Amino acid sequence: MVLVLRGVEYRCWRCTGTTVAPALIHPEGLGFAGVAVDLSDEPALGYARDVLALEGHPIAATVRPRWSRTAQSTYLSCGCLWCDALFGRFFIEEMVSAARACEEIGGLPVLAQTRRPLIEWWLMQACG
Image (cartoon, rainbow, N blue to C red):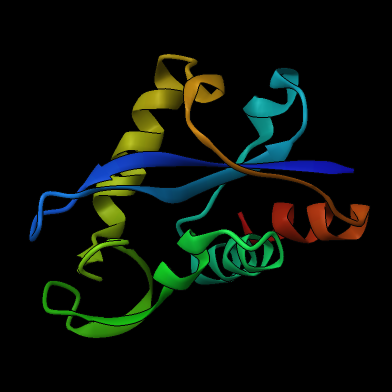
């Protein structure tokens, strides 16, 4: 099965650079966009990081545990490609929700398209 990993453009609050943060994953074909799994929880985001690393994508290195003053905890998060500032989970979720509401998931940037075993998709469904 071919999985498509999409992101959202995120403007960094610290350096104002733009990074495409991993946001959701779905099977190939826009008809599957309705079953896309958001990468808002750690197992799903960790999977996306691993897929990006296998593809040699530089964004993989920006997904790592970081301390959040707002959440008062450390969690797996996306960060700026240029200065490594934490990208708040809430803001990424808001951008994904807006794309879903407007049925514009197909317009989100593609970070990777890769053939993965079917079992991985079923596990992603369980996480999301």
